Length: 323
Length: 252
Image (cartoon, rainbow over all chains, first blue to last red; front, side, top):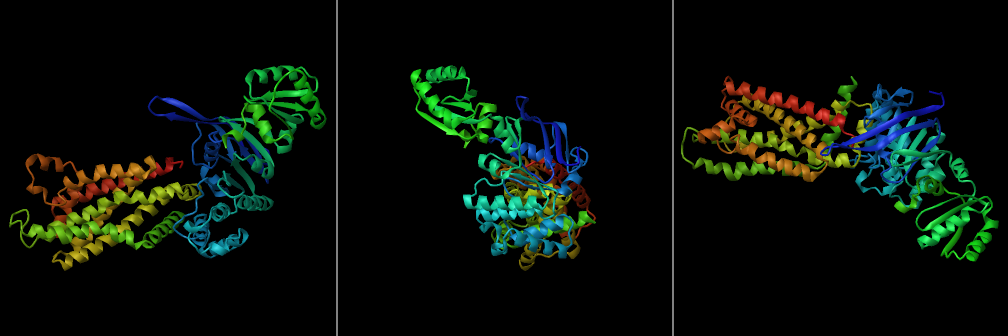
């Protein structure tokens, strides 16, 4: 394993047996990942793509059906207990104990990682300051708002100063302000030298927060790279043409495909995505071209390449459709 | 040693949670106490028989109530399932803490809470005229603890398998009544017809109830006593092993 990699998987696979029919469901179909130290790595995909299952395998909670992985320098199958000492995990549910307050939660978590009472109390204080928890630190967790609870969950995940922290859908259900705040917390953690592996189905989260991404769909990785690199793969800007009628859509696609300025063309049932180099200049040309060829369309718009375009190009579906 | 320290930390956390809601503990005791107050007096008027000699009613009835308290630890999962749901258990599973320490922290706390409840019940029984040797009480409490450990462990196994309170509730309902009726908790099995006696001998809790009655009577050498301890001890070991295994395989 190269020294700058903190996590690496080789053909990691998880198959569930559905008991009665002896059918098997492939939740994760042979995933290869490489995560570099000190980055925010995003695992982007729709719900049910196998993100949580992958995370559960990498955090030693679930045994892989086959494949290999090295996490924080240890073999996942041989030394899960070594891995546990150096990773943190914040599940979708969170993990804070609702029967007590943030301080007690943090102290106990530190002690479970082997800290003395004195050190655990000191560490809890540090984290309460770092994550701005003090205002509600002595109230029971059950009374927290979503954003407050999320901060405690995150603090619990970094109590033992892990090298790598896994966050499963960390901002689901948060209001925009709490999300922005949470993103900043995650960036701060990264700037302290901790690697972050997060799953998300939010495009803006992947776009704004992640240094590098793997896009996952139906248990397989469909694209991998930096956000900029992935968008560049699209090959320019996209003219999105809305056509309700299916025949018209096919006709438009066929005609436009013959145009030399079109780099790529793809779409779903209601839209054509036409990738061109210089969209602003060509928009009017495309419009006139469709009009003169009697292709009736309802909407036309120019969009900068987005991660959704990447997802659409690879899978034929939009990530937004699922939301 | 880290294992013992972790068990202790988790035990204390669980106990603190229990003690922070004393009402639940009190309500958990309500059933056996009501039986003592509202049912046991009826037995006094059943007439003097070999199974229920006058003056020894409490000695025969209270052991049944102790065992029923132990069996009630089947309800332990109702506090555990929400902890699975809120991710707290998963959080523990990702730490370097041994799975067995997590389980012991849970089970031993339940056993401890059970003993607290049993002691209160015994005090009330003393006020109602129970006459019992100290050694009998101590050994009975140990026996009841074994029952509590067994039932709590099974409850966690069911909780991990179903992850739903509904699933656990239907399992508890299914198990509770036959265990109770086939162990002579309410009335001694010696009153039963032969076929029922035979059936009771296949119920491990029958031995626990009878052992407890012998202990209350001061008959420490009775063979039912060591049989009761052996059976309940074996059950406790098996159930704890099974629960530890479930926890290890749980991925939340």
